[in-house]
Image 1: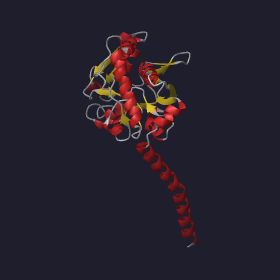
Image 2: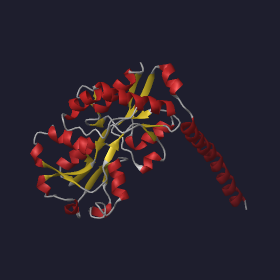
Image 3: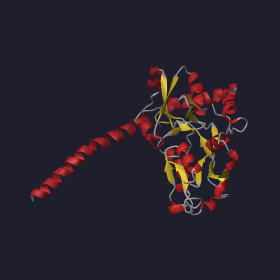
Image 4: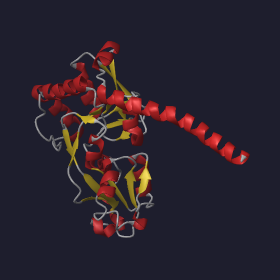
Length: 283
């Protein structure tokens, strides 16, 4: 009887510890979905952007540690219109929406793809760039199509839209690869290291990253990019659902940069004439 009583008491104690945590999480989610923080951002004079600082060419660090990239330039240009400084914060990409909800960051701006799963928890700005998932392999592996990955090891970045595509449409790639499970990486840099060492035979990756990375390798011709049937993607800025004013400010900023030619200059700086602007950003 005493033993049963101890178990019951222990169970109650654990519940008492867990319940406040669950309640706190629910409150944070409610605030994120209903509170407009624009006045707070404007008052402190800066907005905090979360990013994976190894995502070339969207946001990454040079050898000297300086942060640079397409999205870095674009975010600074948008908020310059409002006299607000941009503070970039490196985050664990797989935790990006959690960081947003907890207000560690205000925005996810780093080649962030619009997906049905993400639309359930964040709001998006208008699209500013097109993207797609491509399979990158070393030509020495003789992988010329998705089907050629049968029995081979695939790498994807944890929390990426590519990882979601693999799970969402398993017949395109997942069911063919070794163990029907891809190897997850924290960054594409780590994935490319394993690809070059033949520890993986294919890497599903954003086309904007693949093209930039391969171009800067010592032997670009040793790689092969393979297009599949995954849906085309659109890059946009992610934010809390309650931040309606922030959403309007970013959308208007993108429109202004389009009209005054700044968006075109940023595109050409990072992609030359190959940048795929989806459409004229709306005002």
